Every structure is written in structure tokens, then in C-alpha cells.
Length: 507
Image (cartoon, rainbow, N blue to C red):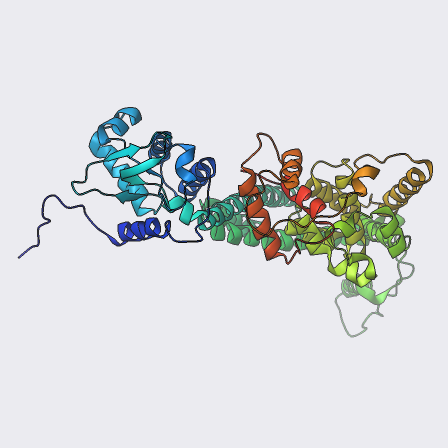
């Protein structure tokens, strides 16, 4: 016999029970104090990261419209709101049943919970100061209890979104490069399985992928196809040049086979002569190759490598240390030795907001020594205010190295000379800290608590993009970021590290 739901009871599920559990934890000691603005921001960003629709985001705004900032300041008193279903539906412009559906969706997501009275009616009472004395309705306290968890969810979603965007751009560029290479090979009439490559490219192009792992697989497949086609293209060019040069070779001497007296075929000597010439063309004779027959592809590759090899001879650890002292702000032990500087490349790139993939590309193109010198120049110019986007500047240096036009030693000598000159004449380098600020005593960044009325708030306001975000939320994100990278909050350079982190902040 089927079980019918009794009237007058709220439908319960595992998600609603979990949301009620979050609300109960709000009254426990040690619960994090969250401002109304921070709770609203994390609620909307987390809802978007969970995939909730626009109507639920609008409902969050309406719920917070009934909440006051003072509701989030009294320990143990949950921020409850009690607007009626009709009022919420009217403000959203939907039916009451539709509004209930969206509200249940927020409860199942664990963002809000029901704070029911005996009759399930929403009502509340405030004292003369406007503080909640009694309230039954919709409890917003799960946002405070899950604040750190939801913040990490938002950061992870934003990271995945940025990575997906980068991979999508990379996929488009690779697809166009491969298509252009196939078209050029067919137009030039080069020998190779270009139709098969076109079929492989079409299979990858037809996949309409949106998941991050699928996009990564497509990029990997396109990179592998690009590498194969580049090798096949170069081989076909070399073969064509060789065949062209072979047709221009002039034989120095030829020797025909003697005529067989027993044979009555008079055309045999001419055939043997042709065979001897043919055999000589593949190693039986000496030839004089023309100068223009030498492969220009190999010459260009050797020229680019020669530029890098010559440039690396001009670079030394003292030169990099004098030219790029700001590198030590991010990795203090970077200049202990050349191997220590080279091993700290990835850590420096991450700390300055450069994508690790850009750093790996620079290593593969420039080599480990030129790459770490280029990274040091990028960091120094970024800290001096000469470079707005370190990642884009690093890509530009890699491209110059690929074209054989990079002379990173010149940049190092220029920076070292500028630093020495400004030190001797008392001229302030662009982007450097004033002397009075450098003499300020170092301070440890607080490991917990609010920084709203401390000197760290001024640092964040100065370096975070406008409009200024919630400073406590930025501070919490910085603590987690520093903990993941084993950065000591008592480090003498913590203020510079915080400034770099704030410049990369995105809400």
C-alpha cells in the first residue's frame, strides 16, 4: 500500500537535513564572524559555481534585502529573515509555486535553511535597537558556517574557468595552425599523408567539448598532431630540396660498361650507360653541389641556437642578482647558487601570477638558463611598473627566442646599470619603494581575525583592483594561498608578497 505524505508537514530530504545541521552549528563557539556583504558575495558566487540559475541568484538578493548588517554581528543569534512567499514571488515576478521551487533549490544546495515555528508561519520581532529577538522563517546562517568551504569552491571554479578559457584559445590556435600547415603542404605539392592528417583534424574539430578534461585531451591531441606535421613538413621540404639539387648536379666522369660481343642487341650499351649514370647518381660518382642547394631550414635553426648559445655566455649569477633584486622578495634563497635560482623558477612564476604553462614553454624554447634569466627580467620590470602583464611579457620573450631575436643579456646589463646609477646619484627607480617606506619596521601578517582597521587594510586598498572588495575575504584568501605555498606570514617580505597577491585579485 503506498505511503501518502501527511498534510501540514514539510518535505524532508538528506539535503534539507544537512542544511539544518549547518544552521545549528552557527550557535557553537568558534563560529566564524562574517559580515553581511561578505556573506552575500560568497552566496551569489557559490551559487553560480554550483550551476544554479539566474532566478535563484535573484532570490538570494531578495532574501538579503530583508537582512540588516547588525543581524550578522551578534554571536549565537542566527540571521533569520521572514518575508512571506507572496512578497518574494511578487518581487521576483513569478508565481508563488515557482518561488517555492527556487527557495527549495537554495535549501538543497545548503546555502540557506528553514527556521520553522510551530505553525510554519514566518514571523519575527526586533528590539528597540533593531536586533533580532525572535525569528522564524529562512535562516541565512549556513553561509557563515560554510564560508571557507564556499570561498574555496568559488576560487576553484574561477580557476577552472580561467584554465578552460586559456585551453579553448589554445585549441583554436592549434587548430588553425594545423589546418594552415596541411593547406600549405598540399599547395606546395609535398609528399606526405596530408589527407589522413586532415581526417584526424576533422574528428577533433567535430567534438563540441565543454568539460575541462575533454578540452585538455583535445589540446594534447592537437599538439601531438602539430608536432607530427611539423616533422613531416620539414622532411618533405628537405627531400624536395635534395631532389631539386640532385637534378642540377654535374657528373665529373662517366664510364660505360663494355659491349657484350655475344649479344646481338645494339641498344644494350646505351642501356648500360644509362644504368651506370643512374647508379652514379646515388653514390657511384663525385658531384659538385651548388651553394643554393643547402637547406635554409637547417641554417635558420642553427642561427637561432647560436644566438642563444652566445647570449648565455654573457649571463652570470652576480649579473642577474644585481639586475633583478626583486626576485629575492618572492624566493629569498633564489640567489644562493645558480642551481637554486634555476630550481626556483616555477615558484617565482606562481608567486608573480605567471601561468606555469608559460614558464614550461619558455624552458622548452629558450633552455633552462636563458629561461630563468628571462623570468628574472620579467619579475623585475613588473615590480618596477614597466610591465603590466608578466605572463604576456614572458610569452613575448619566448617568441623572440623562437625567432632568434632575443638578447636577454642586454636587458640584464641595462637593468644592472640603471640600478647602479640610481643608487649612486640618489635617483629613484620607477616602481621602487621610497626610502622612508623601506625603513619601516617589518610586521607579521595576522594569522586570523579581521584586518579591517589595521595597516594591512591600507596595503590591500592600495593594490587591489577597484572597486575595493571585502578586505577580510581577501585576507582569508591570502592566508590560504600562503599556506598552500608554505609562505611564512612573519617573513620580512610579507608586505611585498601581499601587494603582489592583491594586484592579481579578481572577484
